[in-house]
Length: 263
Length: 265
Image (cartoon, rainbow over all chains, first blue to last red; front, side, top):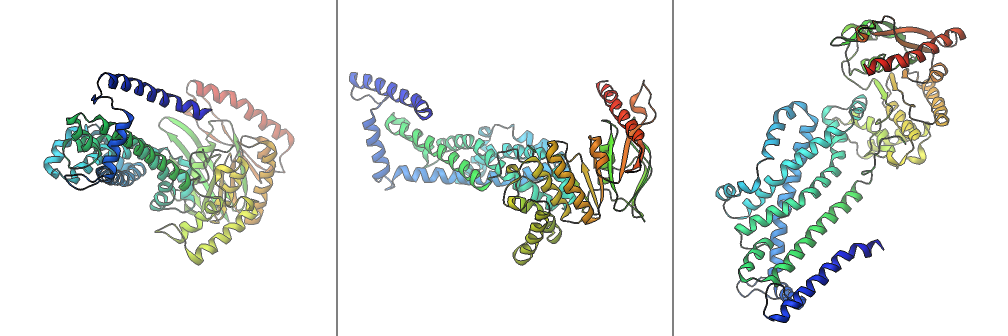
């Protein structure tokens, strides 16, 4: 029943699209704006199973591979940097006093405004696209994790000290393991932004990638390619979010309940 | 020989005097219960013993040496909540103290030494009755079981002093009675010095060998913060007459509304 209710808006959207598309195609069979589902199928088949006449690549897959590689690199490096700095800033007050205002300021810079600088510094290759993602989401992850570390109850830290823990051991055995599932949460929240920066960078300067393709075929009004690509990107984003959620539940079964409140 | 000596200890936060003229000496192996109205410095007293607070004046000595200025493995603690680590299983929670001691760099043990640590942790869990819950996470335990775990976790490193800050305050009366029995048993087996804060006078009289009552002896109605609390009754339990006990009960219960008034100001 719940699933049926959830599907209803999707079904409505499809019906609306089919009606509008049918009406336009009835007036002009060559209409490109709202193509039929049949021409979507042809376009997807062409992109996915026929080698490109220019490069010999299967475009959908090379585009997907290129985009996912950039995204994984950018998000992975951001998550690692965010984890290291978030834990350090959250655990060590001196460091926090030193660096927190800086991180807060950097996170206010609109990353897209830096893109021209990145192109100048790193060239038009892969690096500038990955760096844009990193600049875009790392400050958020750092600030989020710093906050999560500071939210750990003080009693836990005192307790660890009475068990003989040094500051290093507290970070290693108490703070870090409790922050990891929160890192996954932070990454899930930033994935949307990461896709945004990726597609923006690809649209401006790239030779492959999902964002590049959409902006390229826009010149030919090729809605039969653009719309399936958008759906594909949405599916990839949904899947990566789902994977992270499942991984979090598998890896950190203790997380998600207020574990230390006596009931 | 005396284990812990407070000599004329004061604790002040700016103009606010929390504790004043505190003189106390506690023998090794005593079980002190601490009662008093809210805001009478009981927790401050415990935090000073823990090393989280230092006295503004006076000194605290442990076996003739100044008390270390930060929490350490010679003083175990159980709080009312947040005493166990949610990301470790019951067994891992108890093993943690052993692992931290043996492996300064990684905080983890491997191979044979890990099995040895796990075995002594399992013994400790047996003595608090948590063996069936070995592989559970704290969130899967009831409040009483979590406090049992917290006790086991503290005792595995063999501290000399155990500090309990209202450890059973959040538990049901029936479970509380079980916990009393457990704490008394553990205390008798280990010969620890125990300090326990409680709101429950009955608990204060029933457990322990010595009852400390914290209260303000001087008050200024215009400036309630200008005088601190100190130990007003220091009783060996079992020797006090019933009229003294009634007196204390009246005292502490009167003080609760007074302290709340002070908080409202």
